[in-house]
Length: 302
Image 1 (spheres, rainbow, N blue to C red):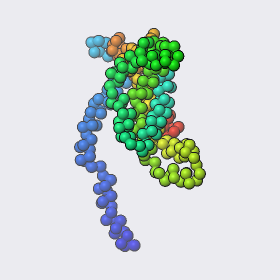
Image 2: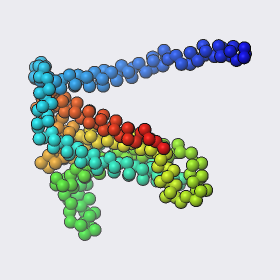
Image 3: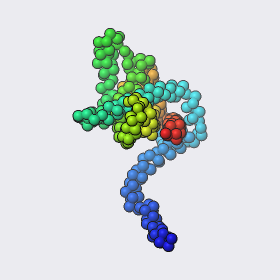
Image 4: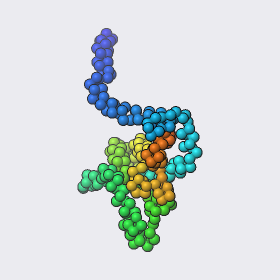
């Protein structure tokens, strides 16, 4: 007993040293924290404060209370932008998750040259979305390669970007193409982290390939898929560059997203208080939905 007490007393200083934050570690992360506060936290807090004010071109800000929010909720253009963003998200998020999961399964196969294929799958992520948007605008034009291909199948030309019935879905498909490589890598990392013993045990119990995938692989991927869903949702609600390059919000504002609305109000009409109010609402929506997703799918992991 005396020896045990002595060993415990000897371990206390070591535990304190291990648990005490290292000054050197703070020294290394200090530059990141500095720039994060300056370029993230301070602008965010400034935008929240500005949303309660009226900004003049001279730089003067007058406090107007919740007037900007009242104007925002009474503006039909805001609700149109919110609807367009919701439709884009409803197509892009499930499409991104399903397609990225499918491509991750392909990339997880042990075949010759798989590293090359993984690199090719990731290329859209490192490609400039502005350049990609210009190329896709040509591909989806009325006389572009997409309509030439569907013409070979006997289908009449599709107004991909010139009809309000198809423009948001077309943009969502391009967004899925641009981001699936990043999500594929996240899911692939989750697949590689699943112990092979789980699949082997299910195989011994007589489960077929589909049963093993549905009851073994997918439950183990649940935390990974949650991350992908949240990131995809946030990216979809912040979509701007593809719309700006490919449609500029048209036709007749059929692709006029919430961020495009914010950009218009702030940098075309210089109504920065009104635009800041839209930005705060955008933040609250993304934060709230992400928290709900985390609550529904993160706390009940099997």
